[in-house]
Image (cartoon, rainbow, N blue to C red; front, side):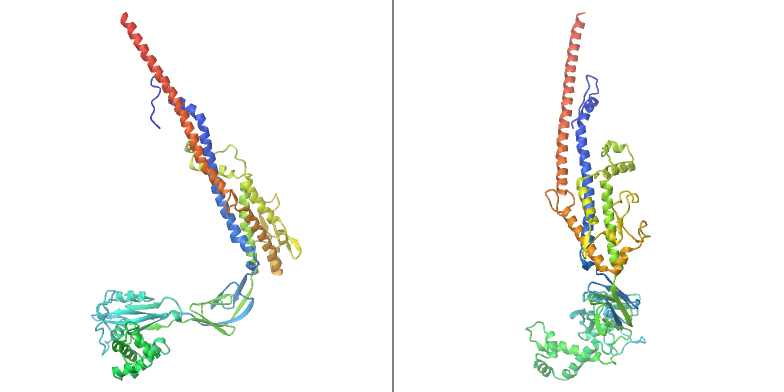
Length: 594
């Protein structure tokens, strides 16, 4: 707005005069802004209410429509310390016998305690080639040559093999990094001077094997303390024995005879091992491949015997195993301690036998579903009741900025809450939803040829004079320990669930179906509302947008009205100035004649 200087000639406070004249016209702009604010508040409240209504319909009422939702079962076990049971869909009522034979475990290797050849503490930056191999008595192992060049060993997890490279420049941190990339979890514990390697998940299929690819790889494993002696039945032991057998056969032959013998049967396992050493599928450099293979076979032959001194006797290997249970005489296994069988999930905690497993209908579960439904319905119906039957706030309008400045924050909040609370009083749209849901809950539903009502199950509203304000449409379950109004009454609902659960399920699934359909009709798509909206959200959005143009138009007219008065007072000032100038001129003429 341009700066204006007024009243210079007349001496009048034209600024105040004009503002007083314009103020009356400005009430239209203020009214539009207040109406816009009220509609914004109403939209916000409807959005909140709509979210609650959809949640009730989708998450609770929708689920109660299906009789299968009420088929809740629970399972008890005679030994909770050994096994707990999660009951899922499809579980059958039964009494079963269970034994927990094995618990699942993860493959784990606790490496032997490491030693540096110079007697210092081993760290992440220590070279593998600077480690020393000692026996259990702390003496250096005789005949051990250490790492004399490039070598490698392989880590195999789930059928995938990864090569770990090592030479004279390889650090402990390099080994840990490569191991972690190979599908296992590895860490060097500097405090305990040990390398720890574990499978990432439990079960035998997730276990790992570590085998040397050559002499330097075997030396590295020994220095790292992970060359744990294979135990009888261990996969590594079996593999070493198999390869040792090949070495005893082909290691005594000349290279030419060995290659000739191996390649004579392309379907044999030894031929496949030879092919693995070739660079690619079409490679036929069998001599180079044989040199690599015979080195592995030589190491396996050494590893399969007990007197090599290459094993780190301080290392310990735990083989990964599956959990195993025996249910009714049939064995089931799992990679974890959670075993699923026919709708039941057994969480195994300890090895035990002769455990009794009892699965039966969960009547408490059905009661809790209905109780939760009634509780959630009451919350939304009470809120709508309070909004629809709110006290009149006629004469209360949103505050202007000037009015807010004259009040404290708490006073402003209290005042605006009062205005917001009255926005839905006798609102037609809210009344349609409120009464529609209330009518469905009061309706009867036929069960086995007899019309039944909520009251037949001990579920009623309180009397008009007993119920609290805005809770006269809420339902109360007789015998509900959480409801002080009806806790002392006989629990009719629980009795009926126990004696005739099918009748209970039939009624409540019918009630839920009727309520779900009614709520769907009330939130159907129309010209003024979107799908899933219980109010005219599209129309309200359109009306809010139109307020912007209405306010801008009214403000523009107000500005023009104000400018008109400024122009008139400016003309008056100009006329007064001209008159004053003429008077001064005449006075000067007459004064000069005397």
